[in-house]
Structures are given as structure tokens and as C-alpha cells.
Amino acid sequence: MDDLKVAVPVKLGIVSDPAFLPVVRATVGRMAELIGFCCDDSDKIILALDEALANVIRHGYDGRSDGPVELSFERVEREGASGIKINIRDQGKQVDLSKIRSRDLEDIRPGGLGVHIMNTVMNDVRYDCPADGGMALTMIKYIEPAAQPTVSGEQTQRSPQQASPDKST
Amino acid sequence: MTDSYNVVKQIRNTGNATVIDVSGEVDLQHSSTLRTALMTQIAAKPEKLIVNLEEVSYMDSSGVATLVEALQRMRRGKGKLVLIKLSPRVLNVFEIARLDTIFIIHESEQEALEA
Image 1 (cartoon, helix red, strand yellow):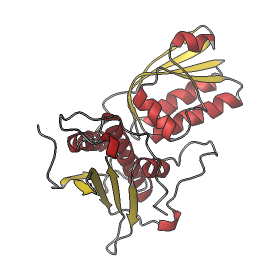
Image 2 (cartoon, rainbow over the protein chains, first blue to last red; image 1 turned 135 degrees about the vertical axis):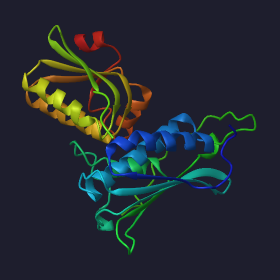
Image 3 (tube, each protein chain N blue to C red; image 1 turned 120 degrees about the vertical axis):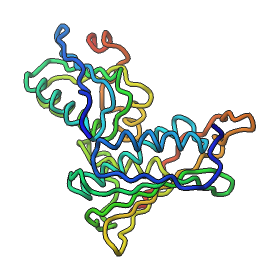
């Protein structure tokens, strides 16, 4: 199959059951590869999305497994760089946006790593509280210039991942 | 949807260590199974608990959090928790969470037993 060139969103509708997470991971991983992300970056995108959905399940729906979750994945472009835009829309509890932030990683304790992972992996992470309820999350990641596919379809050596600032607060 | 597999493949005793062989995807759905196994073994106060992640194809922060909790409990009991055979994909999660230096990580079970 040729690499994905057209910006047509791929949409998935699931419920807030962790059993659906492997399905979502497989879908976004394949889409990221088709857009041109290297395996390492595809894995990071999968992880960021997984963490976002885990937060929806745990915090938005308080562990309920029947809450609706709509997802879309779309190829985007910025200054010649291809990327992936991920939208997550739920009907769970709305959260004070100022309280969504990474915790202090010097405090070694279980939990609370999801937002840090999302902010580190993705170039842009934006939460919104829509007027009709629930939460909306948009995450975007672009292929780093050094990792853009070459004419032959192979990828050149990419520079180390740069941690992006926390944009969710 | 139902849970189709157990991420805790095997628990065995080797010398002064207890080894837990983990497999599959340690995510939100399955990390509680790993937590139960870890806490049960830690309650028996092993001198060393080795967690073999060779067959773990994916781990999210719930899996990492489970291992952090186990590490802290082992330390409180003066025991040692060692992770072995992490794939680059799994190690990457620890690195992003900046926890790769907190754990004792070895490439083989023999190294972990001798550590």
C-alpha cells in the first residue's frame, strides 16, 4: 500500500472499556506508519494516545466501561512536515483545564505519568471543555525534518526527540 | 469485551530469588493482574524479586506505575526488585517517564541473580 497522502480523517467509535485499547493502538500505529513516522515515533504516538484514553476511562468516566468515546486520526502538514492529528471526544466529566498538568517527576511514586508522557511525545496537546459537555482533546505530532521519508521511501537518521513544553495547562 | 489472557505467565523460585515471567501487553486492562501477582509475592518477603519482561510487547504508564509500587514495597522490606530483558520499546516508556535510572535493570536472568 502507498503511503497515506490524503488528509481524510479515520474515525473510530468505542466505549470506555480498556479492552478496546489494543484496537485503537493497532489503528493509530498503522496510520502513523503510513503517514511516514518511523517505528520509534509510531510507538510513542501509540503510547500518548493510550495514556489519553486511559485518562478518559479512569477520570472522565470513573472506570465505567460504557461511556462513548469518538476518535479521529488525520494526516496534517506544517511547513512541509507531515504529521498526525488525533482528536478524542468523550461525554465524561469535565475537568478544570488549569488542573491538567504534568506532575513533578522527582517525586517517585506510582501513577500520574500520563499527561507528562503525552506532553513529552506530542508536539501539541490541547484540551477543551465543549459547551455540550464532556471533554475534547487534540494532539498533534509532526515528523521531525531529519526523519522525513526520502525519495526512495527510506528514512534518514532522526535527531533525538525534543521534549515539548507543557501546553495543556 | 473479555480479558483473553493473563500477563503473568509463570512464577518460579530460583536460588534466593523469585522470578515472575510477564508476557503480552501490560496496559490499563492487564496491569492489575500483574499488580496482584507482584503484591502476593512481595508479601512473602523474597530477598530478590526478578521481573522478566522479555515477552512484554507493550507497556503503558499503568504498568510502569505497578512496577514503581512494587519497587517501593520491596525497598521497604529491605528486598531488591530487578527488571530484566526489557525490549527497546518497553525501555523507552521508562525513559520517557524518567524512571530508567530508578530501577535495577539487567539484560539476563543470570546477571540479575548475581547482582
